[in-house]
Image (spheres, rainbow, N blue to C red):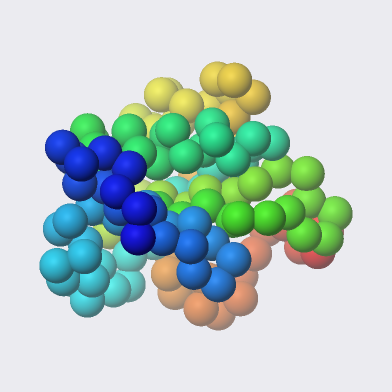
Length: 127
């Protein structure tokens, strides 16, 4: 694991095609985050997504994010999943990030929907 910011202790790890960004809180007790849903962000540049992931974990109470390491299929955008217990912060995140530097914020998706294979038509059309 690579430490991104030793003061804030955000760790980065590549696993199964995803780059994970994790707080020390997450690393100490990952089971506490089971069942969390995810806010979805899309951008053509994974570095822009990484900057948001680091900032949200370091400064805004989030503990885990993941970014697709490589594009596949017809996709032209990388996806970042920023995990949280519910959708209570969607307006905050939309206001901070939607449309800035080409960012597409798509909202929140429950872990249950992911497990059931529920994906947007836009996502499925690009597979």
